[in-house]
Length: 248
Image: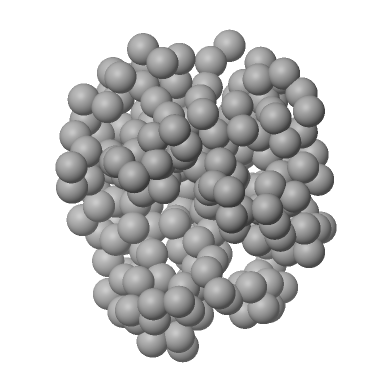
C-alpha cells in the first residue's frame, strides 16, 4: 500500500517536476495533477503522460471562469485525464464575476457527467450557491469537494449528496477546529487526502512551498483526529481515490 495525493499542481512557480520523485521516495506513488485553466490543464496532462503514477484533471478555476469553458474542452479526450476541475465558486476574491463563475461551474458539471469523469469542486465563501447549482444541475456520480474547509454542517450536506471530502494541510493548522470536526465525522470510505501543493504546506512544513510528499503529514493528522492508525488512513484513502478517479 502507498499514498495518493488526490490534488496537486505540478509544476508551479517554485515547484518543478522533481517533486514527483521526492514524493515516490516518501511513499506517495499516485498523484492527481489538477488543471485550473487551459494552459495549466495542458501542462497537467503532459506531466501525467510523462510520469508513471501521475494522472490529470482538466478544469477552469472560478478565478479564470471569464476565459470560457470552451478553452478546455479539447483536452478532455487526452490519455490519463481522470477528472473535470478544479471548478466551482470563489466569492472571496471574485476574480471573475459571480454570474460568470456560476455559468462556468454548471457547464463543467455537465462535462463531468457527459464524459463520465470525476468532478473536482473548489468552493470558498460560496456554500449556498455551490449546493444550489449542484441541486439544479445534478451531482455527478463521482464528486469531490477539494481542500474541504467547511465544518460539520457543510460536511453533512456534501456527504448527503454522495460526494467525497478531500482534506489538505489545513487540518494541521491550530485554527482549523471546524475542519477537523468535519474530518472526524467523515466516513473513511468518503475521505481523501491532498496537498494542493504548492499551497497550504502542513505543519511542520508550514511557511514553505508544499509538495506531494507532504500528503503523508496530512494523513497522519487525519488519523489523529479519527483515532485510528496512520496505516488505516493510508489504505482507506488509497481505495477511495481508486473509486473516485478510476485510474486506468
